[in-house]
Image (cartoon, rainbow, N blue to C red; front, side):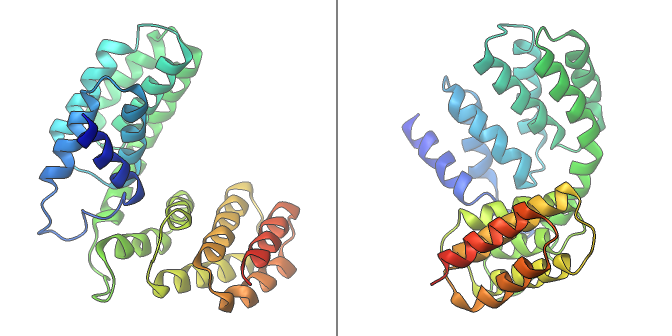
Length: 252
């Protein structure tokens, strides 16, 4: 059990590290995920579900396990911790990108005793098609750079996609990562400047740009001060200005 938990902790830090090349064998990763889903630790099951929503995993056994956990658990205790776990499992099931799970999610959306769980089941139904597209982006090797690791190449796939949520997810991973190649931060800086030049300041975009500012701060590279100053001066949103200014202070 301890080994399984330790492995999942590593997967949470390197969520994209093992699935890029067609030759990569994900057997060990999947076995670990399945073992943790079978474990008695609710906290680790929730962490695993969160990981699955971002990892671009395609494995029928994994999603059948998640579906079984939902079937056996969604109608049980309305305890907030249990509801939180079931809600994350709904999201993880939608990450399969497989419409065959719409029936189960619809059942949960109609019959779960928790309003919160019904809400997330409904939301997850609407995410299935998007997750199918996300998985194709995550696993693509068409533009990969041989100088970069699997994790770094997949981060660039996310950053260069046209999906704002995927860009934001990449930024969050970058903030929590160590020793990434400078090319990753270069793409973040380029994307941030391009987005700041657009006059649209919708909430999702502002949130993503704020995470990009945090990612540049996490680089520890003072060369990005100029980028952050430019974003701060352009921003027509106080929240973004605050994040840009905060990131500037972190780069000495």
